[in-house]
Length: 603
Image (cartoon, rainbow, N blue to C red):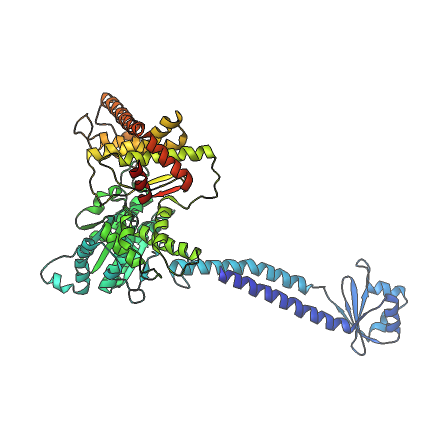
């Protein structure tokens, strides 16, 4: 766009300069020019003062003995000689005068016409030239849609190593083999060993797949080419396959190198979904990737790395040995890894020395590396907003809730009645949680609106867990029904504030029965295939009967009703405590862990 604007500016300057030059020339001519009538012209001819006459369609341009220009307007339909004859001018008297016939030419009009015609042509040429350079990265190659947009990351300019990636200890050890091969390939090839041709990084969003790939490039100190899977697919048939060939060709020229394809599920999804057929552009692109990866030999020294958070949708041919031989799964960080990641992201920030990073890590179960990075940044923003000189622990704790639920909505006007309902609702959740054995401790209760939530109760585990028992899930169902039961108990009425709780409880009850096999129906799995392909969903059939589904519905209803009754019984027997919690929430709006448990000890 800068080049286009520059061209338009140049054209405008040329037009202005041409206009000024033409105007100046006209002004110079005007100073030596005078207009005379026919009668005055006849007088000059009779006196022999005219040496030259130019006859035009609507005027006569005469020049006197001093070469001054004289213009006389005449009627286009009349001849100048007839006019002179009318004034008794004998043509013989004109023999000493040079007479020239000229046709009027409006050079200014011609100049403007040429310039106006040239402007769009010049702009079109400039645009095509710019797009050609962008697509082909060359000044003379245009319409290069088939060329890959692969970009090279130079490790020397922004080197990232395994030290710059906190956590992921086992994953980094798994990739050290790749680094050793790129540094010293003869060590492996001399023994006849073949390095994996492809490494697939799998994990939830934000777990560090891209950072891990860049650190491999930094450790091995080789060229690192990266491209997104979506950049291969275009509206033109065959472009994706051509771009794949181009990307692999570029990587081979720079070997040993790493070619990293981010979000490979954009083109690597399972074929035969029933839509598009074999001529689908995405499937042709995938076929070309399969051919390119299988065509590598031991001398190429190019390793393909790819990242995805949906490995379940990838085509089986892409995952077979010989293509993506090695799969590295990145899990959410545990408490120690979260602490290391937090320390890493706080290095470049001014942080108070009394900040307990372990405490912050305990408050962030389920956070990914990207979430923790966002948390550290939000804490710095909160500290700057409050004109602090350094980030304090309080800023980090506030940022946790902001990352999970969104910013506080203190300006949001809430009616006293709705505020009271929210206080009893959240108090119900917290009171049921502390009265059950298999629940996480309550860390905070608030009736301050955040995001879509009118209030919230935060429960955090004492330690990270990978499994959940049957008793824990049943108690979690009761806690979810605590708010609903509290409203029913206190107001003898229920509100729409329990909508999300009911949805989560229903989903959890369904998984309890159909996925985990923990219900009275027995140890069977009825989990349906969560296929995202329309073709499969249209033709798939259930492996179980409608009668069994009816039993599942009854069992789900029984689970939720039992959880509701359990919560209601607990709240009924502790009604005074519930009222005390609600009253404290209405006064303070927020109860921290120590305040909440101190309140329980009083009762």
